[in-house]
Length: 250
Ligand code: MF3
Ligand code: CO
Ligand code: CO
Picture (cartoon, rainbow, N blue to C red):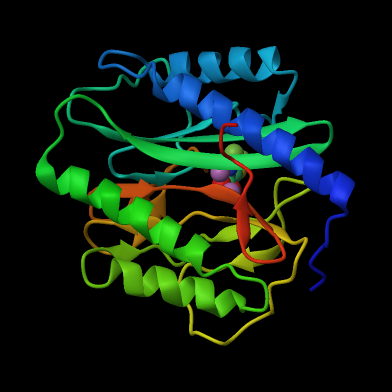
C-alpha cells in the first residue's frame, strides 16, 4: 500500500478544498430546521459548492445520486437525500460534505441536533465528536495508524459502539485513497504517519449495537437495531509537529 506524500503546493490546494467543504457544511448547518426536506439540503449544498467554484465530489461517485450524504437518526452513513424525508424536532442528522476544488478534495461532516433532542441523543452526538477529536489528537508524525483507532476506542469506552466496517481514508487528488483508517485498533501497530500524508478521521458511533445493514437503495446504511448513530469527520494534513485540520474555516 502506497500512501501519497503531498508536496507543499498540493498541501495548499488541500487547505483550499478543505476550507470550501467546511464553509459549505457551516452554511448548510446554520440553515437546518424542522420541516426541511433532505432534498432541500442537497440543493443548498450544490448551490453553495458551485458558488465557491467547487464540485461536490460525492455526486456520481460510484453512482451515488446526490451531492451530499444526509444521515438522520438511525442512518449510520451514506443517507440519500429525498423529497419525502423531512427533518423533525428532536432529530439528529449528519451532513457529510465533500468538495473538489482545483483537483483536490476536502471531506467533512458533522451531526446536528434539530430543535429539542432527548438527552441521550445529545450525549451520543458529543460522544462521536469527542471520538473524532481523540483520533485527530493521536495523528502525530511518527505515530502509527493503530494509535488513532486505539485513541478513538478509549475515548468512546463503554458509552457507545464504534462501527467497524467503515473507516476514514486517504484523500488528495481523489476523495477515497489508501490507506483505510480504522476507527478501532491497537496502539503502536500499523503504518507510520509521515509529514505530508492526508487522510480523514470519521468515526461512526452507535447508541445500541455496532451491527449495521444497508437499505435496498444500495447506499443508506442503518443501525440493525434501529438505535441512533452519530458521526463527525475532518480531513487532516500531517504536519511536522502534528495534524493540521484542513476542513476548518479561516
Ligand atoms: N464523504 C463520504 C466519506 O466520508 C463519502 C461517501 S461516498 C458516497 O467518505 F458516494 F456515498 F457519497
Ligand atoms: Co470521508
Ligand atoms: Co465524508
